[in-house]
Length: 386
Image 1: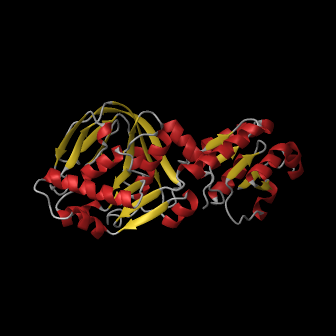
Image 2: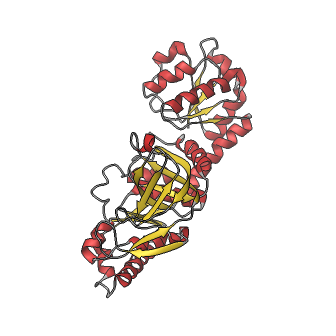
């Protein structure tokens, strides 16, 4: 773990070492931290082999120093350490506000030396255990239109302990076999075939290039994914790994099944999402319709209860960015012009979605979980390797 300490030009490196001796010893001994101290007068001499995991603000008057480092790309983390002495918290608040103006989520680790250490250790421990040993099945390649939704599979394994299992779609097609007599029976055969492979491969989650199944088997996987999510196997569409990781996070962190959906209609006051599958347990009523784009097979129209929800996305090839907000569902009217499950929220997502979205698909879960997710991911990302 690398910690960069910022100090003002009114203080020296020796002052920092003496003033924060106990905390620095804890970080070195408990977290194997590599410590670097930096002031305005020697910023031009600083060259780091890799970006620090944390920035510790030791004194006031370092706001411009941070801004200079951030603007040159020398910093990646947005997590600050400040115990409050020497105007460190005041400076950290100014820096955090600056990051917010840059569209960056950030966080301050604050408290006693023991509280700061425990916060850091707990995040590292939770990061190591949250996904460790998870097996994700990728049924076919991501859909052709997902040009910004892939992940670095090696990075998933090295950084999160996730094992990716690649499954040839022909194996699933053979398992589904001949087309059933009715669309509902065909959907049930598809569910059984996917579940069998998930059990054989010991998968905790899966995503599928679903449109190839529509073409090859004249059926869809929409109902299968809905049922698998209810049974605890996190299941996503179109081979979208970034969204699948978001759904997996929702399950492991919040214990909530997730609706993976497309933003479809945005106004200055509302945002409507739609897709052709949704966990049945999230709905008070479900209707089986045909798949929207193809008019084939079975898709799920789920009526979700009105009330509090969290909308989120964890993305980037190395999962180094995220978006999360809370909103109230205000209507779930149905239209033939969209995917079958449709839900409208009282939130204006235009500034985010029309300017700097994290991909297309977003994840919707019941309840108010934004603070929990934001706190975890902000801390979590402080430990990522660039």
